[in-house]
Length: 205
Image 1 (cartoon, one colour):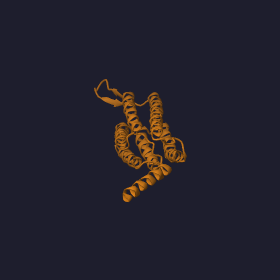
Image 2 (cartoon, rainbow, N blue to C red; image 1 turned 45 degrees about the horizontal axis):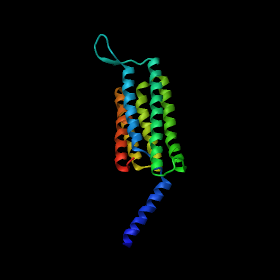
Image 3 (cartoon, helix red, strand yellow; image 1 turned 90 degrees about the vertical axis):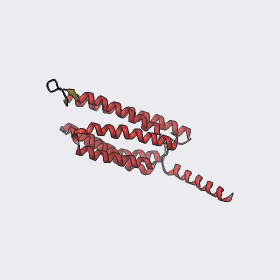
């Protein structure tokens, strides 16, 4: 009996330490919704940049200043929708588990996430303006992955694993430059959905 009480006390202490040192209100549903949004965005981007060749009868990539502007607008919309979904579902989980949504750990998580994201975003924009379009998709995956790894020490361990997979996909995309959109869909779409499902099953969120 005393042994069981001792184990229960240890479990409670561990939960308190986790709550005080890590942001644990991340929602699996936010990952799933973000992945679905990314896949829809990837399909729309595909319709923007691939057109039917009238003579040879196959689809080819056409990139014009107008197309690039459309892609930037699309990327912004995808980012905003994914963020809104993330905040919505994470807030619901925080309310359900009676956790604070905005505290010291949240601030640390966001600051460590934003440093690589901001640097990667600026670098991608520079390459895009310089005309190096093919390297943009790989760079977004690599810097996003690095951002997740950098922020993972303030949240759940699954985030680090997701970040490492994003980096690996980004490096592969840098080698297979012509398939950047496919790797982008795999990283931001499929991996997010798999991560979200795993989180939902493991943590019930």
